[in-house]
Image 1 (cartoon, helix red, strand yellow):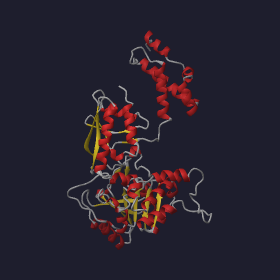
Image 2 (cartoon, helix red, strand yellow):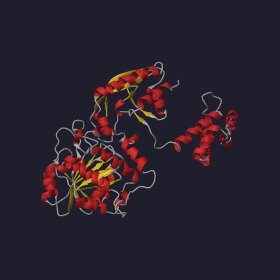
Image 3 (cartoon, one colour):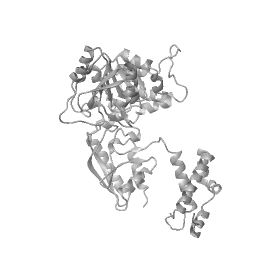
Image 4 (cartoon, helix red, strand yellow):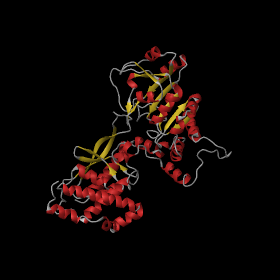
Length: 471
C-alpha cells in the first residue's frame, strides 16, 4: 500500500474526534431526542465516509479539506435521514391524486379526528360493548359496506392483494380457476395474478386471447374440477382496438348455469356511481354486485379514499369462507386501519356531503375554474417570493394514480416555475428540502405545481419554501 501524502495525512488529522463532535450543541439536542448511541453510530459512519473521501483524493469545495462544520452537518443529515425520517407529512403538488409514494389516499379529517379521539387509550376492537362478550373486529365495516352496497356480507383484510389471495385459497384451493388471458396482469410491486393463484393453491386455466375473450371461452373450459370463474380489472393498462370481453351479467348467467362462484377483483375501489363522469373506464363496486358478481374484491385506499385495506363484499356463504380460513388472521387489519376505514365509510352515508368530506372524491370533483383561480393566485405570489423566478399559469393534466385510469388525463392548470440561476432539478430539490417536503413534477426544464392535489394551507407553505431559497 502506498503511503499517504503529507497533505492527505494533514486532512485526516484535521477530522474531529467523536467526543468533540458530541459536545456540539446541535448534536447534544439530537442525543436528547434519539439517544447517545444513535448519534455515536452516525458520527462513526460519517467520519469513516470522510476518511474514504480524503484517501480517494476528494477534497472539500475550498480545496483545504473538510471542516468540523462539514462533519457536523453530515452527521445531522445522516441521523435525520435514518431515524428522523420515515413516514411524515409532505405536500403533494404533483397532481397525482393517489400517489403510491406519498401514501395514496388522503385520509378524511373525520378519520384523523376519530383516530385521536378513540385510540388515545384502550379501544373496543374485538368485543361487543353491549354484551361484554368477544366480538368480530370487522363487524362495523361489514354493516357499513352492506348498508352502502346492499350486499349480504363483507369483511376487510390488510390490502386487496391479500383479499384476492384469501378469496382464491378459501373458495377454490385445489381446484381450477378460469380467467381470461387478457386479464393475467401484473400490478405494482410484482403482484402477478398467475403467481397469486399458484400461491393460493389453485390451478390457473386461461382462456381466450390477449385482446378477445368471450363467455363461450369460459364455458368450454369448465370441467368437474372447476372451482370458480374469475374476472380481474386490468387497472394499470388498457388494450384498445379489436377487443372483446364478457360482461359481468354474461358471466353471472354462466356461473349460475354451472353452479360456480363468480369472483371479480376490481382493485380500484370506486364504491358508488358518484364519479360516473370522472371515472368512465373504472368498474363500480355496487354495479358489479348488482350485475351478479358473487364476490367483489376492492381496495380501501384507492378511489374509496380510506386507509389501506382490501374489502371483500358479496354472498354471505363466500365471505364466511374467507373469515374462517387460516390466512384470515394473518391478513387481518389493526385498530388504526379499522378506525380510519369506519370513519371514511360513514362519510359515504351522506350523499349530499361525501364528495367534499372525502378528499379523494373532492380532488376528483374539483372544477377546472376553481383550480385555475388557485393556480393564478399562487403563481402571482411565487413570482414575488423569489427574485428572478418566472411563475406562469399553464394548461396541463392531473392523474388519478396507483394504477387507476392509466391513459386518462384529467384537465388541470399548473403553476410552471423557472429560474435563470437554478436548474429545474435544483429548484425541485430546494422545495423537497423544506419542512414539510414539497413534491412537484419536472417537465421540459420547468417545475410544475398542480393545485388539484394541494390541501388547505399547502399554498402558504409553498410560498414560504420559495421565499427561503438561497442561491
